[in-house]
Amino acid sequence: MTKTYQFPADTAILADIGQLVAEASDRVGLDDTAASDVQVAVDEACTNTIVHGLEKDPSKSFSLTVEEQEDQLLICLRERGKPFDYDNVREPDPDAPLEERSIGGLGIFFVKQLMDEVEYHVEENGDKILTMIKKKA
Image (tube, rainbow, N blue to C red; front, side, top):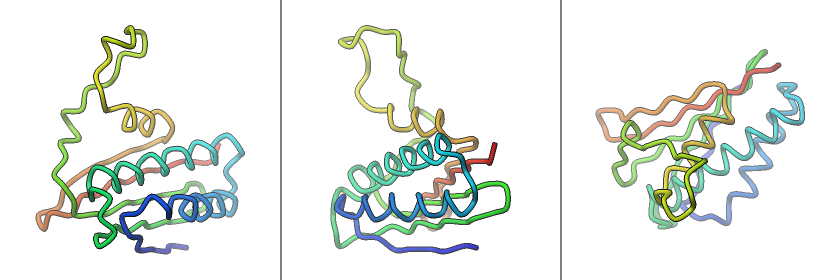
């Protein structure tokens, strides 16, 4: 089953998105740890989309596609906000002292750590697409 939702760039909708993802995780049969990982990753990705990509402008929107497959959950975010160079985000050094850590990049790091597959690309029309997959154990 695949459903696509449209949301305004407003952090007030994050709880609704969390509920949608929790229900989809349950239907796919993800265990509690995997379901929690998906919720954290999707929350982080949506927050980045709303705050950085769409600059918290509720007149702008993004789509969230949730695809429930037999052995995995696929989540896809699509938006047309500020340009973002995904490939040049440096992974944080978790062992570095706080004062030496760079600002930003932790959200992407967490998403990559929590999900089984993560892909980001920009289409010719300017749409930025983040695809995240969590597989059943």
